Image (tube, rainbow, N blue to C red; front, side):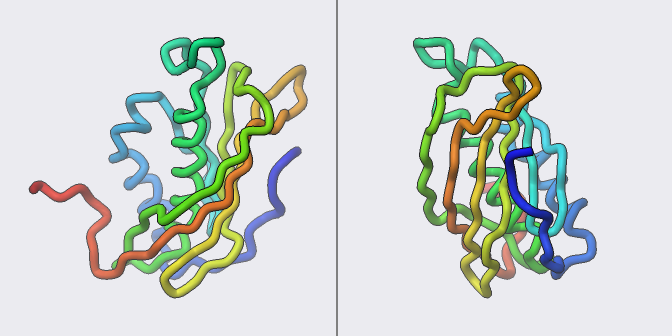
Amino acid sequence: MLGFPPSSFDPQNPDFEERVRSSFNRQRVMQTIGARMTTVAPGAVDIELAYRADLTQQHGFLHAGIVTTIVDSACGYAAFSLMPADATVLSVEYKVNFVAPAAGALFVARGRVVKPGRTLTVCEGVVVTLHNGVEQLIVTMLATMIMLRDRADEASSE
């Protein structure tokens, strides 16, 4: 299996999985594209997205923006899983390499924490698809996430 070794991080919040899944379920963009979170562990999140023709670019491949959206969320939630209960997460920056066209029936974005910090957390991510039962790498990502303290992880009503 292409991907990462198991996480060895300890979450600061014992209810991290419930918090991560609840936050993900509030992301309207994930609902819009039909993504679903499959794995949540300390410092590790997987998000799956089935191929949809309405999410493709002109050649029929899943659009790069859609692929980037799921791996950015996987990395962000991997970082969020290690944060305390009074914190939330935002992306600060990321670098993406597209190594193959996004062709396939199912795409899996895996986000993993490389180095958690007091404010910034460095993550890496991949997006893979299956071809004849073998995973094929589509995207690699290196991302930096910021922890915001004393801020609710919910959209403001403003």
